[in-house]
Length: 116
Image 1 (tube, rainbow, N blue to C red):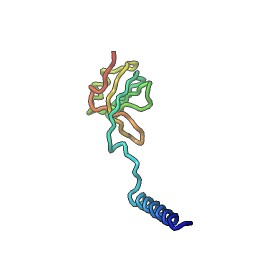
Image 2 (cartoon, rainbow, N blue to C red):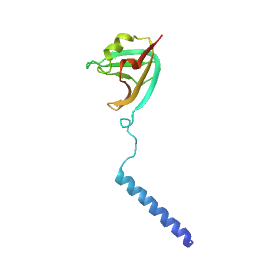
Image 3 (tube, helix red, strand yellow):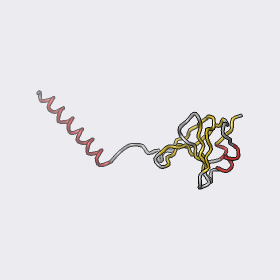
């Protein structure tokens, strides 16, 4: 090996060592869904409406596997009164996580619109 090649190899190992040490010291850089709310719009036909024991509401659309969560404070009762199975709706909410699963969380009843 030439002298320049040896220097490049040494510098490469030093850089890799620095990256390994930084990764170990700083931990995982994976983004957490709860840190940065992501607003989404979902549209589809209501497949099911489930009230929960806490007074909340879970809607499921035929077009999506992600449930839509409406809290009691977010107007679950009002949404339940205005939406029926088979209705086509548009929902604006934030992606959140509950028990390790993603859901769309609705903040207010106006975020659930029945399309006629």
